[in-house]
Length: 277
Image: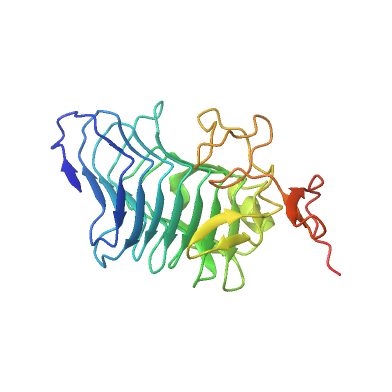
C-alpha cells in the first residue's frame, strides 16, 4: 500500500487494515503540511528485506501513528525527513512493534518533533534507533527491548528533548543505552550524562512473548507511567488510569492465580519487589 501525495497538502487516513505475509506494508510519502494518520492496523509476518513494515517519508505536517500491531522481519516503523511543527508534533502512540531482524522503530536523519509515547517495542537489532540530524524527539512511557544486542536504544545526543519513565531491557547482558556514542549501563549513568530518564528503569520487560505478544506483567510497568493528555486509552481501546497509567502499549491490572478457585483474582497493590520462595 503506497500513497505518495507529492507534497500537495493532502490529508491521508489509513485505518483498520490487516496485512499478512506481505513483502510491502504501508508507505506514506510527502503529505505536505496536511495532517495524516495510520491507526488501528495489523501488519503480521511482514517479510521484506528492503522495506520497513510501515514507512513515512517527507512532509512538514503532523502524522499520528496509533494503536498498530506489527510483526516484521525488518523495522516495524521508519520515519524519515518528516519535520513536524513544534507546536503540533507527530505522535507514535500505543503501538506494539516486533521486529525479528531490524529496529522496532527507526528514526533516521532529518526527522524532527516526534513524540514517542506508551509503546511496547521488541527489536531484533535495537528497539529504537535515532541517529543523525533532527531535534524535538520525546520518549516517555515506553518499553524498549532488544533480543540480540546489549544496546537497546541508539540515539544522537542532539535528537532528544525529553525522555523519562521508560523501561530498557536486553536479552543479552548488560542492558545499555547508546547516547551520543557513549554507552550507559545504569539509569544513574544515563541520567547523570543527559539530565533525563531519572524515573526510567533498566529491568526485565516481562513480555509474555517478545516475538509474538507484548502484553506484560512487569511490576515496573504497572502504574509507572506519567499521565499524557493525548493518551487516554491503550492499544486495545481500554481506558488508561487517569492518575497512574501503565508503561507500554497495554493497560493492565495485576492478577494472581487462585489455585483453589481455578481463576485469576486481583492482586494486592504492587510494591515493586519480587518475593521468591
